[in-house]
Image (cartoon, rainbow, N blue to C red):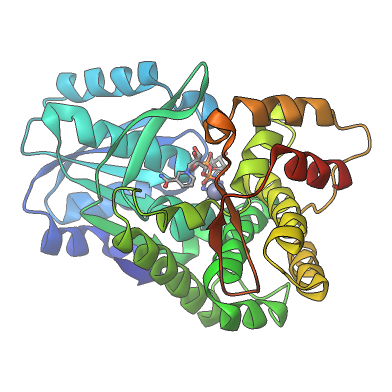
Amino acid sequence: MLIGPSLLEELGKQARKYVAREICAIISDSNVAPLFADRVEKSLTAAGFRLTLITIPSGEKSKTLQQAGAICDKMIAAGLDRQSFVIGLGGGMVGDISGFVAAIYRRGIPHVQIPTTLLGMVDSSIGGKTGVNTHDGKNLIGAVHHPLLVIDDLDVLKTLPPREFNQGFAEIIKHAVIADDKMFRKLQSWRARSPRRSLALESLIKRNIAIKSKIVARDESDRTGERALLNFGHTVGHAIERAGDYRRFLHGEALSLGIVAACAISIRRAGLAPDQRDAIVDLLRQFELPTTLPKNFPREKVFDALKLDKKFEGGKVRFVVTPRVGAAHLANDVTLDDIREAVTQL
Ligand SMILES: NC(=O)c1ccc[n+]([C@@H]2O[C@H](COP(=O)([O-])OP(=O)(O)OC[C@H]3O[C@@H](n4cnc5c(N)ncnc54)[C@H](O)[C@@H]3O)[C@@H](O)[C@H]2O)c1
Ligand SMILES: [Zn+2]
């Protein structure tokens, strides 16, 4: 894992240290490729790599099995073999599909991730989950395939639209709530207009990588419940995302609303103090994240989406609650009615 400014220019040199292979495919999307592919290609070519750039349309609609197949076909046509590797240059969408392609191409070749969104840096590039969506839902097909190398160049964040930048903070605030009260206090005094390249941002990203990595390492295969803590705010968040047809809210925005709902439930079921809930809501607002649903938003659709959630099978609900900022656990006494009420209050 490398993190810092101006890393794209050094990519070739750095990759040489970690990857003993010559040929690679760079997978990127139609927004990101025009911004950074040139620099990446130059740096890799100068270090003696041979490469093929594969650009797919930006947006979640590209994260399909069909698109993964089309990428594999292009890689075969370009002569990539078992001795090649894949670079994912983009946000979480590109990270997930390029990782999935790396996992299945010739039964698995190395994956290098260059996340270009804040969400990609603090969340999706960590933990090894890769995959694509199907008609019925998100990330239903996938593989665990840890990247060989992750390169976080802070400069790439400068072109990120403000909404995309802010949604990364929803995952950061989630990490603070479940695992780090000190980081929570730091965020409270975060200057909203801090330059995106600041040292503060670098240390914040590092801290978030450490938090997620530690939780993942304790529960690599999602068995003990530890990794499930990362789903804090996501049960309701996912339902809101789906109810908005994945267009109304970005993932981090829906998560922000899901965190507010999870706090209401935590007051009831985990003894969270109301003033701590207020502090969490204030912090989400500080990063311009939504904390209430628009009046006319179809709440019924949120309830429908909740019912589709596998976690509710058999009546027992596993729901992540927080008793205080910096801690979280799984509760199994949360009912669908608790969740309904929390969504109604949003
Ligand atoms: N694997 C995991 O553990 C994991 C975890 C969380 C999320 N995810 C996945 O991540 C995806 C969401 O990630 P995301 O929010 O990064 O979305 P994204 O990759 O779709 O990027 C968001 C938008 O920003 C654009 N963009 C990216 N970098 C840019 C830059 N530097 N400058 C300007 N524009 C830029 C993209 O083209 C896109 O339009 C979802 O598919 C989600 O399922 C995966
Ligand atoms: Zn998330």
